Amino acid sequence: MKPFTYERAASPAEAAAAVADRPGAKFIAGGTNLLDLMKLQIEAPVHLVDLNGLALDKIEPTEDGGLRIGALVRNTALAADERVRRDYGVLSRALLAGASGQLRNKATTAGNLLQRTRCPYFYDTDQPCNKRQPGSGCSAMGGFSRSLAVIGGSEACIATHPSDMAVAMRVLDASVETVRPDGRTRVIPIADFHRLPGDTPHIDTTLERDELITAVTLPRPPGGTHIYRKVRDRASYAFALVSVAAVVQRDGNGQVALGGVAAKPWRDTAADAALPQGAKATTARLLADARPTHDNAFKLPLVERTLAAVLAQARSGS
Picture 1: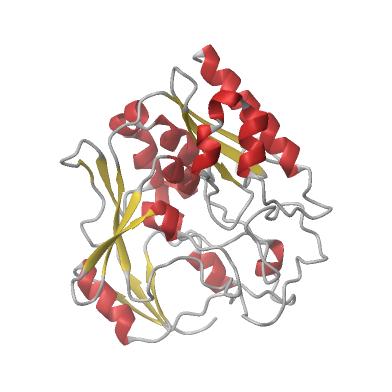
Picture 2 (picture 1 turned 180 degrees about the horizontal axis):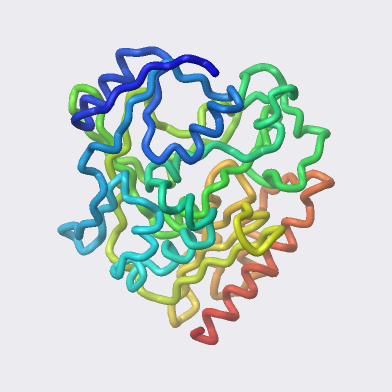
């Protein structure tokens, strides 16, 4: 075990300052991902700043008719919230499709967005991985890549983002609120929050190291039919090979985002415009720049079939 120190933060800005002041410090809340990474020595923080005492666990209406979800709202509570179930059903369904009940009881809204990839080479410390150790190489290139990215990857990395919740947040055009040690805040559109790997696959998001997520905000309810469909190797507690989050209106218009295919939730507004033309046209636009491997080329037709099932369900009103 690697030794580390620990403190409980009294305010969001104090938490951010504690991380800023200690190189190698990390925030911890539910710990459902970080603790696993520490056990494997993929992450070795020298100091942990516990956020659980902060008052960031509420779901509140916003002035413009949306919802503000505190960073520490547990996945179970968010999925069960009456307003979320009624007005943002795709989010509730995505949360319930992820992990197990026990993990959802601990996992937080902010932590869910910040999950690290489940690429097997990232978790195998005997294998080179640019996301784990920059410049060491990507074992997935030429390795077993069945579960990995078909679009948005680079020569340095083809890992995927594992979150179901993030895919629903992307289709809903959520925003991420943050605070810095000096109290400065900013709002990051979810579309800009996660990064593609490029030459720096070890940098997952646009957050600064000392920047703390305080909330995720949803805009006014979009109406329509909300569907989240996840295709995976087993019926429960497995990460998506492909997932589709969609909000479909009565006239066939709407928005769609994909999970399991890229390093971030994958959405294209031009693909949204193609939804009334059906799954084939929409998938062609969504995956126009796809570069699958021999192992994961099956994901392209799987996206089309899954989206077709989603659109058929939307038309049936079920």
